[in-house]
Amino acid sequence: MTNSMLRILSGVACTALLAAAASVTHAQGKVTVEEHVNYLNHPNNIRMSNGTVELILSTDYGPRIMRYAFAGSGDNGNVFATLNHVAPLKTDLGSWYIRGGTRFWHAPEGIPRTYVPDNTPIQYKIDGSSVTLIEPTEKATGIQKEATITLAPEGTEVTVTMKLINHNLWPISYACWMLSAMHPGGKAIYPQEPFASHDVSLLPARPVVLWSYTNMADPRWHWGKEFITLTQNPKMSDPQKIGIMNHLGWSAYDRDGLLFVKRFGAHPDAVYPDFGCNNETYTDNNFLEMESVGPLEMVQPGQSIEHTERWWLFNHVDLGEGDAGIAAAMQPIIAQTTPVP
Image (tube, rainbow, N blue to C red; front, top):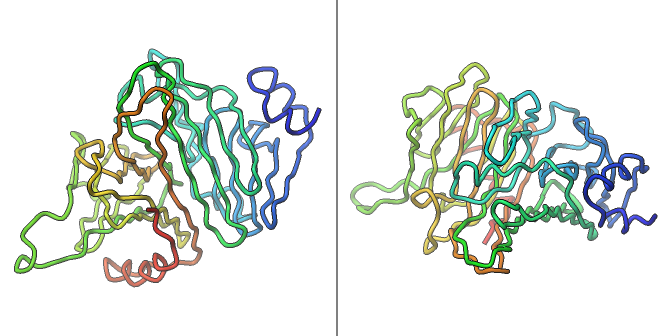
């Protein structure tokens, strides 16, 4: 059986065949793509690497990106959380597992619609240094998820583009939503709008949206002049969440000097979910989520919408003390990254 035939199989038969298949590696320049890699007790993952960083993409479930790390860095080097110990959420549609990594949802959030279980095998396509993960159409919503992951031939840059296709016979209003569950014990950084005094600026700069369980006095928050930060604390279980309209189009997560940067679009004239948020964050005692959201759109039958993030990793980053330390460290780093239009 050829590799291309293997890639188009799905379902239980595909799972059995792939579990027995030998690992297959494709090379495109400096990027290698390896199929049938065992990860987290699942045999059919895809490993992408350019020698500097590596990604693990699930195909036994998903679509999910379960690992992003410097190559060979071990379990602790994964910037994403792995959450197999967290009990599933029971819904009318079945059991939904948090799992960790980066997942792809449609907003606004609602139960059970958002939490359609993604526990079955998916299809995928390999195209050079890109892999596209293709979920079966969700029976409950009529929406199909795709995610294309492209690894740069050098450095740490990754481009992730998600697509949501409306397979219903009627239009639906929804938005793309990309969520990264981060390794515990770090701190998320969200830039404030450039400061301007009352003498020169009388109009609001952007919304900051609170949920009913948001406690602004919680010590995990720091509301600074230049940055909002949220620290993940495994000993504090109370959930916390905010959303913002982040016109600067970036956020970051630091854990012991390993810094993850994600960039995303900001379209001031578009309508966004959750009172106008393109950037949200959530934490509890298990993980912290860095979330970006696309515009809310009315999607016609057979049509789709897309949303893109770009990622980078930086090692041995010293954020210093307070806003001044973060600013000194982040300014040259952000200057090295490319905005998402």
